[in-house]
Amino acid sequence: MHFDTGSSTIRPQDRPEIQAVAGVLNRYPNARVRLYGYADARGGDAANRTLAQARADVVRSALTAAGVDARRIEALSGGETNPVDSNATAGGLAENRRTELVVVQR
Image (cartoon, rainbow, N blue to C red):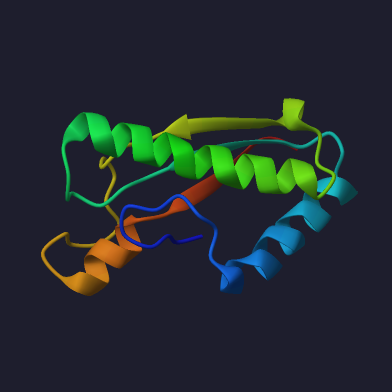
């Protein structure tokens, strides 16, 4: 899931993805996941860590609102680490403003 610059608000076009992920998690009640929030390289390191955590937290909240047990979801900040694209282009910056879900238990 991707985010607008400086925002931790889930975009309307991403709501169906939240519902789809929640549906899968609800079908596999023993699964545990870790959400990592990330930011692009604009802004300071501390601010990016905080923003990235807010992104992971908002996705966690949306999944729990869709019926997933909150105890199954860990939300962490990756700050501006682990870019998936260059921070030198607008497209790369957009790709780096994201959350990633990692299954830690099936």
